[in-house]
Amino acid sequence: MGRKIRMAIAGLGFGAEFIPIYQDHPHTEMVAICQRNEKKLNEIGDHFGIAKRYTSFEELLADDEVDAVHINTPIPDHAAQSIAALKAGKHVACTVPMATTIEECLAIVAAQKASGRTYMMMETAVYTREFLYVKELVESGKLGRIQFLRGCHQQEMAGWPGYWEGLPPMHYATHAVSPLLALSGKEAGSVACFGSGRIEERLASKYGSQFAVESALFRLRDSEVAMEVTRSLFETSREYVESFDVYGDKMSFEWQRLEAEEPIVFKGEEGNRVRIPDFAHLLPEPIRKYTTEGVYDHAGNTHLSFKQGSGHGGSHPHLAHEFVMSIVEGRRPFPDAITSANWTCAGICAHESAMRGGAHVDIPRFG
Image (cartoon, rainbow, N blue to C red; front, side, top):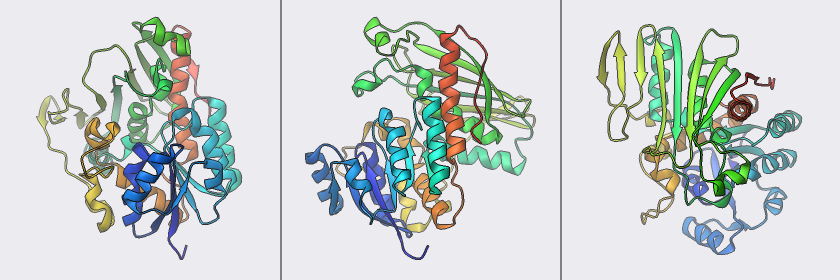
């Protein structure tokens, strides 16, 4: 396309992290922001110099000067807002997860196909520096044949917004699931998952799920490889971790146990800690700096989601760049709607399995 892509962002908590990235990207201009809280909307608009401001998502979609919408609103709004934006002719980037039900994922895939617009789930875990490092090991052949994968996302969500309270662990499993599926190049095909422990009744009653931890074993579609994923959100003592382990026949990669440590690469039985390089060189020069610094508020008022997990491993500018370039180049983004649906429904089906005592559950095909 000849002119710059005109971007809007809806949801300005975590979403504000992306404003300067789009302002500095050579193929985009940041034209509008949307936030229900007018006071906060104006604070952010004044801070970043954005004139167009909406308290209504519907009014934002009616703006013909907006080409693409990056959605960073609460989880329950993702599906309806993504579908509405696609139907309005906008390209859509949406934070994780894609939706909360299989039916919603099917509807987003259908809306994307009907609209011909781009849809990308903005999954940070497949653009972190750790992921990009292991991706190079896989693609170069150094790691060899993948034999097994393991992912873990443990986080204490006490004090987060009300809809988080009591959320079943696997309903938001994309951070643990996606790097494994992306490195394998496969879809999740089926799952058996067990719930463990219990959370207090005040939390359990919100979604009808008592489990403190859910741990799943997935079979990958059209593959002899399996993967294991563990997830917890409440009342389970553990430092925050979004980790993945990959075991190959030549090399293996294991995430560190503590955030302050370095990961380990094994060759045979010998393991050595490695310092993961940054991958800013893959990006246009104007946005390279955003792999190593927060952008939400240079006064130090960084959003909690950036503090935890070391700023999502420098992934934010990589995500924005992939979304933008997929539009510019007229190709599917990674992950596209079909892949995003598989990654999201892997967790939804895992929770279904846990609620059925570990029963085998097939994960739907979306394309």
